[in-house]
Length: 347
Image (cartoon, rainbow, N blue to C red; front, side, top):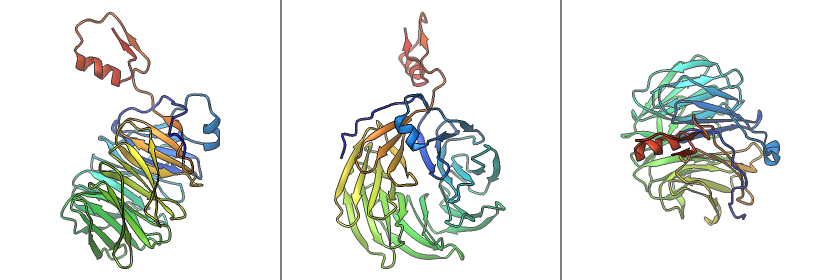
């Protein structure tokens, strides 16, 4: 693996970034974060690898009234959905920036969203202990899934779209029939909170990550936990399978990303560059580039085969590069706030 040293940094994102989604067919990256906005980036990967100029989001989507916890492109790339602490879900056109629909119904923060593989359904998970299934075309809530005694933190459709997996604050993982809303299976994970869940491309396994700092691999059909991947030193917040299903990638509040061999359980690489919790991961369309989003306000681009971080995006802060001189009486807290907003020097 490479050294993990970051070769370039581009100015750009304000506040913690909780979610990213990559639409590889159109070279679009969506990022959602604490300042209530969604930013859209043009990320032609070949151009970015050789680019020497600053990179900025080309469109900023406004409309939510609280932080953004999740963003997702529909599989056909035509729609973008966002979920927020304002208890709503919004569906956008990524090409025009227009908000096409706002979905109301959850009674608390909406933490996670996922499109079905056929583009027709959207699932949402909330702190109100429920999961909702929405018709994307009409915006109608088709059914509400109840059964988690705690907040629901993660959801993932099976590859055929017939079942939905969910996990949350209650250490429980559930499998639901999407058509009927019936709970088909319930499993007990090894963590009090299960922050992340992912389904393998061949629909044979699912993986979970949570507070116990480990990733668990489960057999979908038997419900048996086949393997535990240990190595993170803090909670696992996000996971995904590679396109061929041979590896699992996990991001953690220990500020690292790990790549695991599914067959052996070995940790193939540990990626270091983020300075705070890693909240979200996404793979490029060709699965050669890993994108990661962090509470440190950055998005990193990694070469999956070498572990090399070849690009970092950071959106411009309000006072980026400003120098303030001759101002007396500022407290340390006020100076720290100004620097967090991008002021480079205060004296």
